[in-house]
Image (cartoon, rainbow, N blue to C red):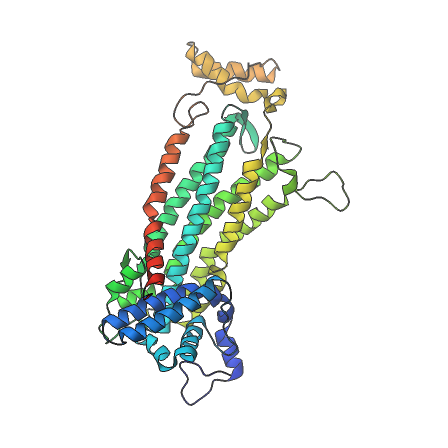
Length: 449
């Protein structure tokens, strides 16, 4: 068994080691490239305060770039007996560079290393998530504009209610994503603060330049209070999970609608044949399995904030190993949600709309309010018009020309999609992902001849 960074003369029991390490070696592979970026920033800072020389910095940065490349290519491996990504990176540096590799841990703890790794990883995943949501948003807006003139029944209590349109249906989910992105934006701002330099949660006697690492890593600011930086672990993941749950809720509802509307009893939409599955016994079946799985996965993601809260709940200030378990539910959740969004975007882009739903007179009653409003506009008291139309429906005499004239903002005839697009554009611009990308690229180029 390899010696741990923290071991002195007593080697830990093998079963205890297995239990305490848990799934860290597997899950830390998510964090590997970000751990290296953090080490590059920290090492650069150490040189400015005289803890390593300029020559030592150059060789460290060169080797860290090599490790980063391995991580990006999926070739980074945590060796047997090495408990986490931080230990593996330091071990690789020490094997390659000797004692110089042992100097990079000055002024930090594995506590603030993992805090930093999680922040860097999470903000990167938020960027991918925001970009993916924006793509789905644009697909929904395009379909809303394309089918804005095609009417469909609107429902309350799953009973035919009033005229709606595919413009409204697609557009409603687009605007829902705008609100979801507002919450994601707020959690991103919390996430994009630098905890590096808080060490084990109580700072360091070294004269660390925390502003320098903040700038090098493209953070907006730092977690200033070192105790709060440590307290932020779990809180950040929980709040990001709430934002993810909001997006998942929108996707799950859309998936349910698509399953229902594609069934033969509705036949409002037709899913792409290549996106459905068959039955082993019923040759006619075309099952909406993708949307059913999407619904289930998104419902699972909506439980993520509660899972995180139950792990971190009632912990006092300071670090506790309980927080390690959050990684097990949090880190893989981004990939699951991204898969759901991509699948949804693919199908919504190819979905076929039934433009002749209202040829079926079973939906005639949904025009009752239109007729009541017409009579009221001609001077009949609203309650009298309501009663007349109701009696006509009961007597089987109700007729309507199946047209509507809605003009107010957000209605069938005035979708306001341009206003909704402006809202989304403003939110996307506020993330300023370009600043982060530039900072990380500059860091990866630093020290090169």
